[in-house]
Amino acid sequence: MPGLLSSPVCLTVIWFLSLSLPPSCAQIQTDEVSGVQYGHLQWNVTLACGNSQISRIPVVWHLNNSAVLPWHKVTSDGRLVLLSVDQSAQGNYSCYDNSGLLLHSVNLRLGYPPGHLHISCRLTNHSHVRCYWRESVKTFLPATYSAFLMGKENAEWKACNIDVTHKHCDADDHNFYNTMHLLNVTETNALGSLSTYFQMRMFEQLKPDPPESVLVEKVEDFPQRLMVSWSYPSSWPKDRDWYTLKFQMRYRPQGSKYWSQIPTKENAVMIFDTLAGHLTEVEVRGMDAHISESQWSEWSRTIFGRPWEASTTPDPTVDPDVEFPEDFLFTTQPDSTTTKSYNVLEDEGNLALVILLVLFSMFILTSVLSLIFVVRMRRRQREHATKQELTSMVKMKAMPI
Ligand SMILES: *[C@@H]1O[C@H](CO)[C@@H](O)[C@H](O)[C@H]1NC(C)=O
Ligand SMILES: *[C@@H]1O[C@H](CO)[C@@H](O)[C@H](O)[C@H]1NC(C)=O
Ligand SMILES: *[C@@H]1O[C@H](CO)[C@@H](O)[C@H](O)[C@H]1NC(C)=O
Ligand SMILES: *[C@@H]1O[C@H](CO)[C@@H](O)[C@H](O)[C@H]1NC(C)=O
Image 1: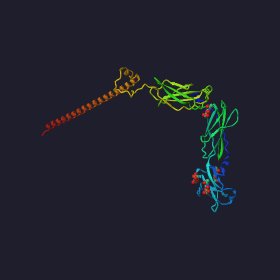
Image 2: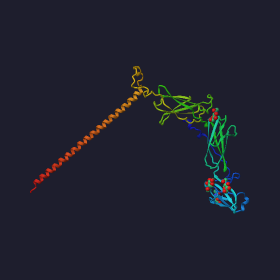
Image 3: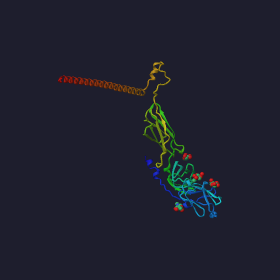
């Protein structure tokens, strides 16, 4: 499919710019109010025992009220340096003076500064874009985001409305037509901040929602036909003169690997060659009819349909013992399809019976033959024995006494 091959993934130019803060200032981020200090995993982290006035007093450090500390050293001015910290070094650090007086306590949280984001955007229609991002680095720290969108023509950043929990942002713009846009998402945590830029041609990201209300209906008297209809996605503009979709409908008998596909510009299509008597799976997808660089929607949910069938089982309300008038019997005679399948079944039964008979007679034949063989052998052995007896008797008689 040329539409998919020239997909925006191949054509869109993505570039990243890093604006991370210098690491030296990231390491000693301390929030005095909440008593939390953030540190970079794998680096050395220095904890100060309060402000510098107490620097001359020898101090004792505790972690979570225990004197057991991770790999560390204490500087002459009482600061605790934790070396190459890992996750287990997190906790509540407190320092005491010689008399056991608590001088200061701080909670240490460890993680990484933000890394680049993986960004993807999608237009559900010509004026609405939603962009998603995913971290390339697990930071272990709470983060905030900001996102801005800029069209190449108006060169002015506009906010993209952020949903922090789902990590996406939404923007509406009526100037999305055929223009280059730049999205900037900035992630910030206690250890730093990083902006990722994503450039896109808007229409390459145009990917409608899948068609809705897909309906599969049987067609009376046609065991190989199915009527499939659907409606435009509700997020698509209602003005059908300007905004039209083209569709692909695909179908296959349930369990089959191979789809058959029908392209159409209508929102209904007839299948003429479905497998009679089988459940058929049907899916539909849509794409902007005029913008060839745009993308196909996802396939709709699978809908199942069974083509029309002449009823094969007799009407359960009909009692075979009841006598019917002659003309009634005539009209309820089974039609050709059902008769055919019945004959097939009967033939199969006969074949099985014939095979069984042949096998049985072969068995009898071999038994009889082996019986005859055994009897023959026995008789021959006996004859041999009597002959030997006779000769030995003759020999004995011939011997001189
Ligand atoms: C951490 O401190 C140790 C001891 O002072 C030093 O040898 C090492 O280079 C430091 N590591 C880093 C990443 O600064
Ligand atoms: C210290 O306490 C914190 C918070 O309760 C906990 O996450 C951390 O694992 C503890 N650290 C140690 C070394 O026990
Ligand atoms: C840390 O430990 C100290 C001393 O036990 C205590 O006073 C302080 O409230 C603790 N801080 C936190 C945030 O748990
Ligand atoms: C475009 O899609 C968005 C989100 O799906 C929707 O809220 C908006 O109403 C749609 N616009 C039109 C003109 O249908």
